[in-house]
Image (cartoon, rainbow, N blue to C red; front, side, top):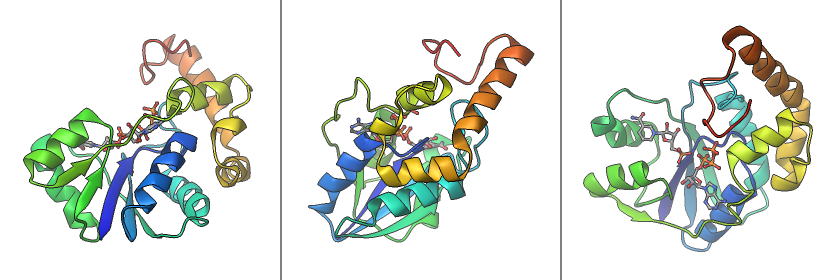
Length: 183
Ligand SMILES: Nc1ncnc2c1ncn2[C@@H]1O[C@H](COP(=O)(O)OP(=O)(O)OP(=O)(O)O)[C@@H](O)[C@H]1O
Ligand SMILES: NC(=O)c1ccc[n+]([C@@H]2O[C@H](COP(=O)(O)O)[C@@H](O)[C@H]2O)c1
């Protein structure tokens, strides 16, 4: 059986990794949808689809499962998003997500959806990882080692700090971050 799991993976962190580990015990193959694939170089989406594919491919290489990373760009129309996903992905029988909109759209399209528990969500959240990167705090503990290596290789910390600084000086505040986020 083949599964599908989509996220923005900005960056791929240990919560995603735990979820893939669980999924690997249920399916033989897994498509990892790289969501919002056209977005990069913003505070909420600092990494390109290609960079996120590197992170994901390297991190999951130790799992005993065949994976395919497929970039999926956003659409303005939620009602046809599942068809869009299916048109880009190898066929799959089950979709994994904890995102309420994603769950709703797949269910309405007749696709089986499975959820997982949220793992240590207080810190295993992309928003928290990015905030720590901006503040030079211990973000590496929250991601697989392979992801930390990719972030360093691409100059990711310098990038996120620069784009956040630019954002602050040009617009007063980032309109691309959660309101709770001070950057
Ligand atoms: N700690 C976690 N445990 C289990 N599932 C998670 C965890 N963090 C994210 N997920 C799930 O992984 C999928 C992709 O999440 P996403 O890439 O948006 O990460 P995020 O941590 O929610 O990021 P952000 O804070 O940037 O919105 C979603 O279904 C999300 O609910
Ligand atoms: N209309 C759309 O383009 C649409 C609808 C639902 C989810 N998505 C994408 O799917 C991904 C879902 O991942 P998250 O669970 O990480 O939010 C995101 O990239 C989101 O933009 C897109």
